[in-house]
Image (tube, rainbow, N blue to C red; front, side, top):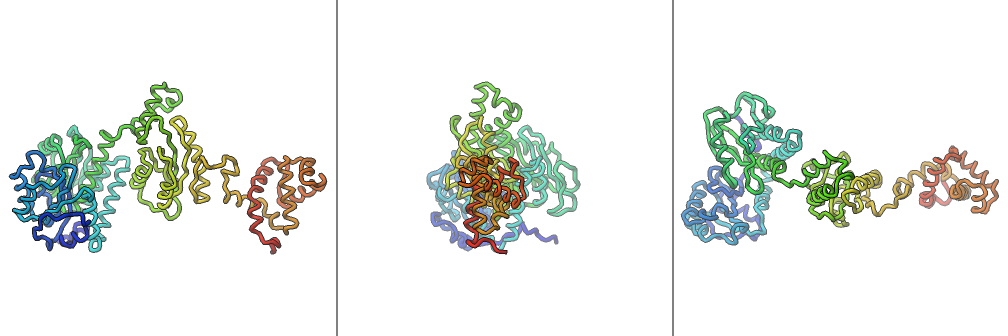
Amino acid sequence: MTPEPATARLSFVTLEQFLQQLPPELKMLHDGGSGASLLRWVEPSELEDPTPYLPEGEFLLTAGLPFLGEGGSAAKVDAYVQRLVGAKVAALGFGIRPYFDAVPDVLLDACRKHNLTLFEVPESVPFAAIGLEFSQLLETDNAKAFRQLAETNRQLMRAVLSPRPEHELLAALVQRVPVWAVLVGADGRVRARGHRAAGQGAAGHRAAGQDAGGSTGVEHSLLAPMLERLLSGSGPRVEMDGFEQPGSALVFGHPLRSTKDANLGALILGSDTPLTPAQNNVVQSAVGLLELLVRQRTSGSLAPSQLATAVLLHPDSLVSGSTKHVNGLKDLLAQSLSSTRSGQMRVVQGVRVDGATDDGPVRELLQWRRLFDTKLVEITDYGFAAITRFKVDDSLLSDVEKLGWRLVIGEPTELLGLQAAYQRASSLRSRVVTTGKSARVDEVTWSVAGLLGREAGTLLAERLLAPVLALEPDRRDPLLAVLRGWLSENGSWDGSAKLLGLHRNSVRRQIGVLGELLDMDLNQAQVRAELWFALQYVDELVAGLPAEGTVD
């Protein structure tokens, strides 16, 4: 007998044990005596009849969508609860809002009649938090299984970033779940396929779009009735069918919907056996990512894509375009930043330092978009760059630095100044890398010494002036004073002699000594410039030397 994959195994906890972990705000409205029942999974569902997809021992969560309109009649609510009891659901959690302000009396009456445990879930407790608590409770006995689920989700997210995200996502899905998969667009045409290779386990699969033996699905024409239901219906749902072909005894379809419930396509899967809860989790993740992809391409926020298209196709239009065109770009930019056309923005560059966690490009991209409230973020070789309307105050900077990152924070600018602002921020990035400290462009002294920074400047002084710094203080300090005075007078013998209170021949002689000690030609302008910048940091070095000088 083939051993069950780790991702299909789940330990059980009792309803009573689970309730001890939940927030006290949950209110039990009816105790059906299922406290000792074993829970298999926690799942939200707004289907009128979710029972075909529920494992035994489910904690079902609903916000009441099935009870709107005619679905709220006493007869239909009673039938709904009776079906849940027949499916051996352990408990029902009813979420307050957005559809109901209180648990309907007809639902409470039906749960009492059929003895189904019923909870009221307040608006302050999201369904996701309940699911998270259940997952954490299972973690000890299922650490390996959940690590594999996490790796599967990471694999799915990596697929989303690939050049052919839909194809790669289906390939990853059929690698982890024993199904064949077909992705169909809103026009009913196949966009991508994922097939399992014949005689292979979970690790065996073919790249999407290739022909394969074994579970290859059914003829597209046979799926037409299911597709018609998927693309013409509304709301969350799963359509079911079955065929005699291998790997197709159970065929189920998920619609891909826009945020306004428009049908953007469908994902159809086929298998010979029901999927386990863990495998269904993977399927739901894939459905969510596919919906994200089609929403971004069709019905998501349109401003960033319009802005990118305009700038890519007409890069010179920023400076040569008409006022109307430029204002249009400003509007698109403002929408991408959750700002106004007249609002100023900043370029922010993030540099990863030692100890920073690597959550992968998808998580990082979403993290920076959330923290800086912007859709304009790119992942770079040094970290990330973003355009934000935020001032990036000390509180936000502290949050980012706790994650192991340092920032270059640009000064306020507008659309036409973005490129220059990015260049100024880029010029400070090496300083942030060297010092390990974040920097604000508008707080930097824009001089060579200011841009060099204390650490780099001290290192420069230590390297260039090492032979002089190694001398006894009574020789070192006069030579440094002569060098400083001579350079400040642009190499004028008379000017530096007057400044230092020395004879010009004495100044000339000591400059000659310095040239020999440093092994430099002090007549060269570049040498003089480097020494002048080094002298700006030499006092700190001298202060740290022993009073007697350096002794070999």
